[in-house]
Amino acid sequence: MFDKYEHHGNMVTVRSDLKGRHAEFCLCQTPCKFFKPGAEDNCPVAQATYKNCVNHGLVTPVFECPKFEEADDE
Image 1: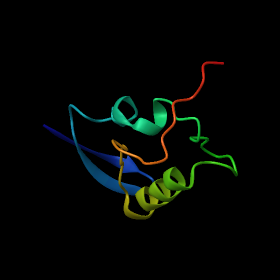
Image 2: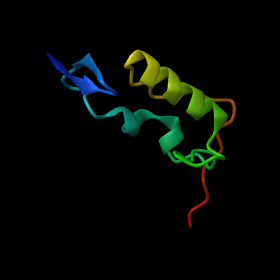
Image 3: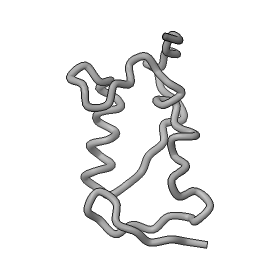
Image 4: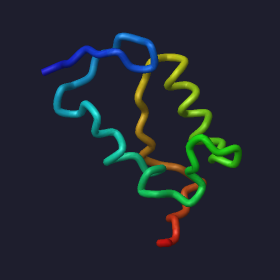
């Protein structure tokens, strides 16, 4: 029912059926045109959410966002 593993340097617990599935649900990774992980112009909301996740050993999919805009197909 639950798995424990190391994530961002912390031992965390996750429901087994959800482990590794956050990207399937995260609006940022739909993809949003502002989501640019690792880039200086990454979305400030996504960057702050990621920083919070690292600081607290969390995984937080975003379900709602006022800045979301669907990325154009390239």
